[in-house]
Length: 398
Image (cartoon, rainbow, N blue to C red; front, side, top):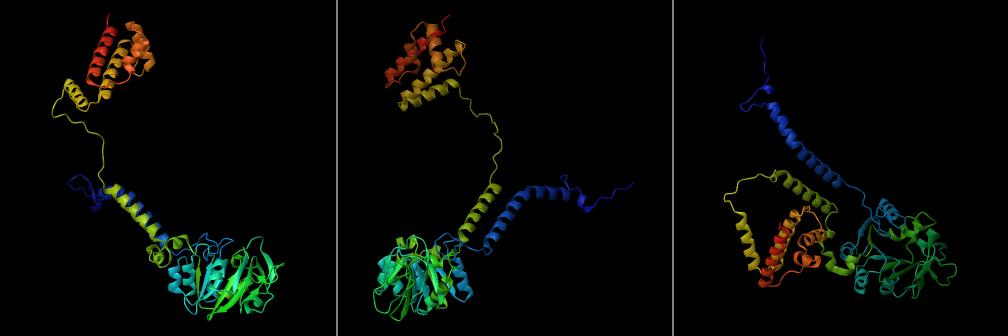
C-alpha cells in the first residue's frame, strides 16, 4: 500500500512540518496581534465624530437643564455659524463688525478684557453680566442680582424683538440710565426696570439679559423665550458664544490665546495615552524574559570564618557599634535558646526567663545583656562580647 504525503504534511530536517510551524507561530503571535487589534479598534472609535458634551452652565454643548444646547442647535439650523470659545483671544480673532458676541457671566473678566470685547466692533449680547455692561455703556445698569424663582413677564416696550416674544420666563432687573436705552419685561413690582434691555451705541447694538433662564434648555420652549433668544442672537451669520474660563482669567488676554491646547483636537490626549499603551505592550512583548533562578558553583570558596571577620572589620571601620552588638546578642540568644530547647521564634521575655533560670542570674541582668542599649565605643563593645561569652558558657555549663 502506497502512502501519499501532501505538501503541507512534508517533514523537514528539524522534524517539523509547514503546518506545525505555522500553528506554533500563530500560538506565539495571537495574543500580541489581538491586543494590537483592540488598540487599533479603540483608536478608530475615538477618531469617529461623536457629540461633545459638557457641564458648563449655558454652554452650547451642554444638554442638561442649565445648558444652552437647544438654542445653539436651533440657531445652527437657521444658518447661524455658532462658534463656542472660552478664551478672549479666540473672540478677538473670530468677532468683528457684522457678527454677534454672546458673553455669559462676567465673574472672571477684568476691565481690560471687557474693553477688548468692546473693541471688536461686533454686536454684544450680555447675559448675567451687569458689571461688564456698566463698562461698555452708561445707558444700562444692573438693578440687582437675579435671585428667586423665574417668573413670566410681558414685554411692555416697543422693541421689535421683545414685542415678537410677547412674554418670557425670567428674573432680575436692568435699569435704563441713559438716552436711547429700552428696557422690557418688567417685574411685578418694578417701576422702570426689566429683565431685558437694548441700546444702540457707536453704531452697534448692545443687548442684555439679567437672567440666564430664557436661554437654558429648561425654559427655552416656555412662553416666548425661544423667539427672543433667536432674534437677539441670530441677527448676523456668525455668533461667537463666549463663556469666560478660569484659565483665560489667569493667563489674561493675548497670552491665553498662545496655549497650544486650545488648537489641538480633543482626541489628541486619548491618542497619546493609546500610543503609550502600545509602547508598554511592545516593551513587554519584545523585552528580555527572566526565567527561573539558575544556581552556579562559586569560582572561589569563601570560608564562613573569613566572612565573619570581614564583616567585623567593616563594622569597625564604620564605627557601627550598634550593628556589631546586635549581631553578637542575636547569636548568643539563638544559641542559648537552642541549648534550652526553645524554638527560634521564641519571644524575648521567654528567652530571658529561660536563660535566667539556667544561669541563676537575675532576669534584669540577662535582659540588659541580651536586649540592652548598644555600646558607644570599642571598649564597651569588647566588654559586651566578654559578658555575652560568659553568659553563654554558663548556659552551656553541664
